[in-house]
Length: 257
Image 1 (cartoon, rainbow, N blue to C red):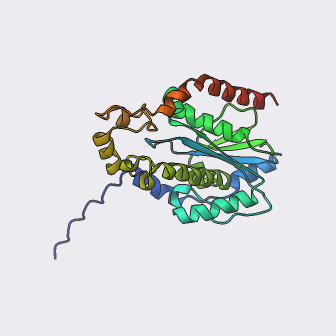
Image 2: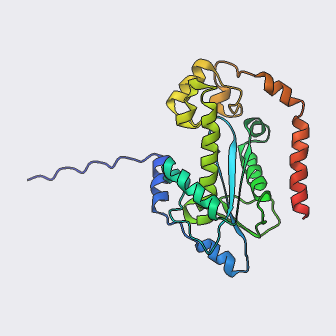
Image 3: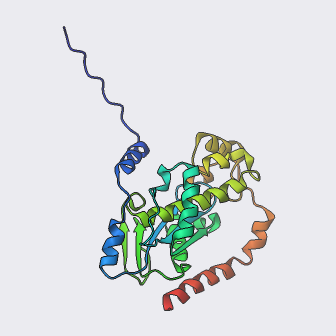
């Protein structure tokens, strides 16, 4: 009897392949233990969320876990259902030595680009930790920071501290974006959180972008209808330089301590 030809395996998309890889990785305290063994006492995990979104801020979290208390179930926030993230976020806040969340809004993202905005959000989050960290574990990036640090590819899937930071940032950003859904209902923000879903892209083509969309992102600036500008944005532009000066002063103050 002739053998049936083998059917070609369906090729995975890049996002599906990455998700499959992340599910195989184990989130542990391996990197934290290496830092502790090297003499660090307060190891902070740092991560950002919202980098690929078309709408709203990029949000960063920083967490110093208590080595004497294990928060079970930590892993990359993208792999957790929303309800589980909410539960873990409360446990992290309750048991961490320190935690912090910082956001950089869409206007600033358009000014300095999303990469620099992500790094800025991370630096602000780290600067707000009390007590301050003496070692940083960062998801994929290095920061302009005086303390020792280690960048870890797929860090939110490998390091418990980075995973904790990812969860806090994800929960906070989801809350922020969902709060804007009643204001801009045509985009479906409560469900897509500002990302490039078919519904979101269709709404951009039909209605144009809102004032809180990232104008520097191609699907936004390619929209056929101009971006709406609200009065509060015009009022806020006068104090924009003051806000930037205050932001720089904060970072300089922390660096000088």
